[in-house]
Image 1 (cartoon, rainbow, N blue to C red):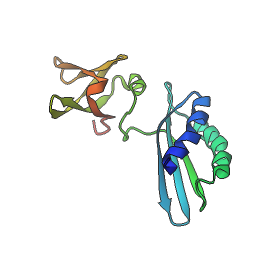
Image 2 (cartoon, one colour):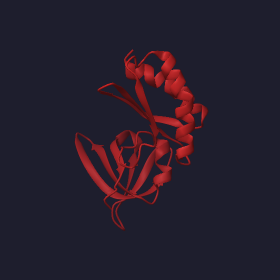
Image 3 (cartoon, rainbow, N blue to C red):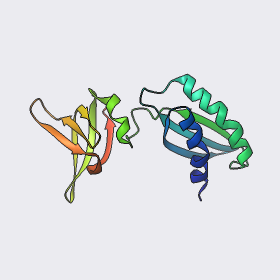
Length: 150
């Protein structure tokens, strides 16, 4: 298993203990050690306190794991709006926000911009214009992110 895979294996149960879920993990190697990043989310949003609690619990576990023999800096944070959404449960709290959604449309890929109007268990409803609304299944979404520029 890769270092990132082992890292996530250690991280996931701790994050879930705090009623959160892992969006992504990343490891960057820098001079003098590594930066181990954990991006988390909850259905109600991520607070600084939650990140600090998870960081405090994970640090000694990672020290004991020997994953980072040259040392590490641990960063636990929200993924932020610039990162693409990965899981259907991330969408409900984005209702009412402008989105950029890349979808598979047969063999083609289509980029849609609009307002997220609904987030259902199987799909989303994106308002492209006042009258043009598109229901998009999660399986057809290649990438979706909040449109920070709009």
